[in-house]
Amino acid sequence: MQKRIFHLIMIGALILSLCSCNRNSESGGAARVLALHGATLELEYAGEFSDGFAPVYKDGKWGYIDESGQLAVECVFDYAEPFSGGTAIVSIALELSESGWTPYYGLLGRNGEPLVPVEYEFIGEFKEGLALVKKEEEYGYIDQSGELAVPCVYDLAYGFSEGLALVGKEEMLGYIDKTGKTVVPHRYVYACDYSEGLALVSNNDKYGFIDAAGKVTIPLEYDYASSFSEGLAAVGKGEFPDLRVGYIDRDGNAVISLEYAAAQDFSNGVALVETGGGSCYIDKTGKVIARSEDYTTILEFSEGLAPVRKNGKWGFINTAGKQAIACKYEWVGEGGFSDGLALVKNNNKWGFIDKNGKVAVPFKYDALYEYTDGFSVALKDQKYGLIDKHGKVVAPFEYDFIGHIGGGLAFMKNDNKWGVLELPD
Image (cartoon, rainbow, N blue to C red):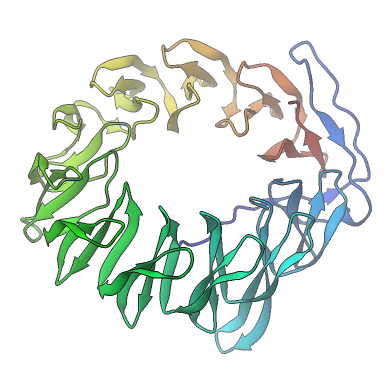
C-alpha cells in the first residue's frame, strides 16, 4: 500500500486579527490578511487549504478551520488529511493492543459533516470514483457517497486503474471491475496495475502482459519486466549479474535490444539506462542522448529539458542531447522545468529562467521555492514575501515566514503570531 505522507508545518498562536498588508513599490494586487477568530487561537500545527478547509492541530487532536479562520470541525481526531475532491480522511485510535493504539478511519463530506463512520482499518485515495477500504483484515471499495460498492472480501487489493483493480485471494492475484465482477481470475503470483491497456503479470518467475480481457498478449517469457510507459516496456532476460534489459512495444516486438544492465521507464521521450560502465539517457530508437561520463550530474527530464552539471556549473540539455541552456548557474531546482520556468541560482541569488534561458524572475532573492498554485515563496533581507510567475510581488517582504500555499490561501507568521493570507486570483 502506498504510504501516506502528510507534511506538517508548525504554527504558533493565531491572533484575532492581523494588520493588513501594505502595498509597496514592487507590489500590486497585494494579498490581504484574513482575521482568525474564536476557537482557532491556540493551534499548534496546520495543513494546506483545499476545498475550503485546512486541517489544524490543537491539544493533541485534529480538526479543520474554514477560509475565514474559524473552527469548522472540532479538534476531535487523532489524524486528519487535507480535503481532496470534496472528502477528507480522518481517524480515531479506538483499540489498544500490545503494539499501541489501532487507528480506525472515516470520511468527512464537503460541508465537514461525517460521510463514512470511523470504522475502517484503512481508507485509500479515490481513484476513478472508488476508494480502497479495509475492514476486519479484508479489502473492498466505497464510492464517493460513502456506500460500500464492492464488499470487503479480498486479502489484498489496490486502487482502480483503467477501470480495473488488482485484488488477491489465497495468495493469488486477479482483476475486478467496478461492480466487483471478476474479469481476470486469480491465477498470478505477481501483477501490476493496468497501464496503456496492458498489465504486467508473472508466474513461475517469468513475466509477460495481459490485455483488459485477461488474454495473454505478450508471453510470460521474461526474467524481468516493468509496466508500459509511453508505448514501451523494459524487459530482460538472464539472472543478475548477467541480466540484460531492453525494450518492447505493445505488440511484443523488440524495439531496443536487450543490452543494458538496467533500464528505467520512458518519460518525456527518454529513458535512463545502465550500461555496466556507467549510465546514459537514450531516446526511443536507442540513440544515446547524454552519457554520465560527459557530465558530473544528469537529473530527470521535465518538459523536454534536463538539468546537467559540468565543471561545477549547471545548465540544461534537450531530448536530442544538445546543450539548450549553457552550464553557467551555481545551482538549479531539482524539479527542473515546470510550466515553462526553472529555479536557478546565480551570483548567490535565486531567480527563474524560461526555456530559452531568458531571465523570467530576476536574481535578487536569498531563497526561492518552486511555484505552488502560481505563487513562489521568496526570502529577501531576512523577510519572506510572495511573487507570481511574472516576478510581481503579491505579498510584501515583511513576514517572518510564509508557507503551505493551497486553495488560494497561505499561512504566514510575524512576531510569533500567525495568520492567513488570501492570495489574488
